[in-house]
Every structure is written in C-alpha cells, then in structure tokens.
Image (cartoon, rainbow, N blue to C red):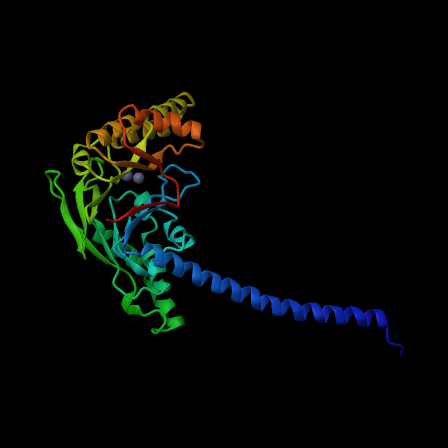
Length: 348
Ligand SMILES: [Zn+2]
Ligand SMILES: [Zn+2]
C-alpha cells in the first residue's frame, strides 16, 4: 500500500507540537510555582520587618451584601502577625494577598456577629494546612471558647483526613485547631491588657453594641505608636476614651440617613421585616457625623473607615455619605478603607 505523504507530515507536525507543548508546560508550571514561592517570601519579609508597623484592611465589608470581604484587619508589628476579626471570605483573601498565614501570632475577636467570625474555622484550618507549626491563640471576650471549640468540633473530620492522607510529617496533628483565650473586659470602660509580647501590647475595652454583650474594641501599642480598632459600636464614651491621642482609629461607620431611607423604601413597598431590621441596626452602629465628632474630641491623628454601611459605590457617594459628615468636625487625616488597603507606619 502506498503511504500518504500529507497524512504523515501532519502526524509529524502534531508530534513536534505535543513535544513542544509538554516542554513548555513544564516551564510554565515551574515558573508559576517559583513565582508563587518568591511572592510569598517577599511579602512575608516585608510585613514581618520589625522597623515598621503595617496595617492591612483584609476585609472592609459588613453583613450587608456587597463585593467586599467581610470584616478583618491584619496588623504586622515587631515581626508579629495579629488578626482582628475573621468575617466571611477572609481566609482566601489573606492568601490572595500572600499574607504569611502560617505565622499568625494571634486572632482577636471583637464580638459574636457572624460578619466578624464566619471564616475563623477556615483561617485556623488553612494556616495549619499551609504549614503552621505553633499554637494558634484566639483571644476574645466570654463566648470565645464556645465559638472556637464549636469550629474545632465541626472541623474534626477535616483534621483527621488531612493528616491521614498527607501524614504526620506534613500536617502534624499537634498543631491542628486553635486555643481559645477568654478575657473579661473592665466594666468601667478602662482597658485591660490581653496580649503582651516583645514590647507589643494589645488592650481590650468594652464598646456599646447592645444587645450584643460583650462587644469589645482593641488598642494596639508599640514603641509609642497606637492603633485602635473599634469593633462594632454605637457612639461610645468608652471608644472615645480609648481612642485618645491614637495614631490610627480604624472604625466602623454607618450613614444613618441612608439606612433610614432604605427602611422607608421597604416600608412603602410593604416589607415589615426589612423595615424593622433597617430601624434596629441604626441603634448599635455609629453614624458618620458622630464618628467625626468622636475622632476630633479624642484627637485621633488618622481615622480609617471600615465596615461601612452601606458601602459607597463611587467617590461622589463616598463624599456625600462619609467624607462630608465626618469633615464637619474631624480635622485629622481620613482614609476611606477598601479591601486590601495597606497602611505603613514608620517607627522611630
Ligand atoms: Zn459587623
Ligand atoms: Zn456587630
């Protein structure tokens, strides 16, 4: 039988193409892996640099659906990685930002609304799977043990199968899970030290998020610099007192006039459920104008907005809902938070 030269040459071309493709896939994959390793190492080196403090707003969302990750703030100070709240989506967001999740020194929970803890189980689990080799401490007010132990129970099979599959050497069961550390904040609004390591101090204090009790804020101090995290709170004397002279106040904020309008719309459309919810939530959050007054009275240097209700969609809304009302009183620096926003504080 006569061979078909055209068919043969096509087969040869296909063979060469497949050979080239397999070679290039090797190179592409290897390149991607090297890129990923280097990116993580570069970010870790930078963030764990003890000569500066870095704040990363990992998530600036709230329970109101938006394209934002729910609430979480990461603070890198003196080589320590502290996480404040873990709302939905935070575990993946931290990895996308290449944050060194295996090196988390402590997670601090402000209160027990799910937009502040929904992803705690994933953060605990992923930090372990990716190589954490230390106990992960979770700090928070009464209720933290129940929360952490609940996650540990629900992740029991996950822990078991990961170690069974990859082996003790790769995912040692010794470091799975996390350790809850509950504290009782001082009732008089004064702060209480809940974490202290190599000069880094974290204080906790009551805020007003009634009926959610306890609800706390945190004040982080190192080398004369101070960062206050409000947690969720209504206008609060305790928050004002603890924000006194702070370099940074990272605060939740609400545009109550807009939330009221949303409630009125629901009412006019015959939805009593959302009318009630929109009314209720105004009682335990801080309005932009109130926050401006609080930050000015406390002589805060820089006010950072997170957990904005509602999230503004453009600079005109941001100006109208947040900047203008805050600027009626507040003279300091104002940063409008967004997911992944990074703030560096040089140290003396
Ligand atoms: Zn919240
Ligand atoms: Zn809340």
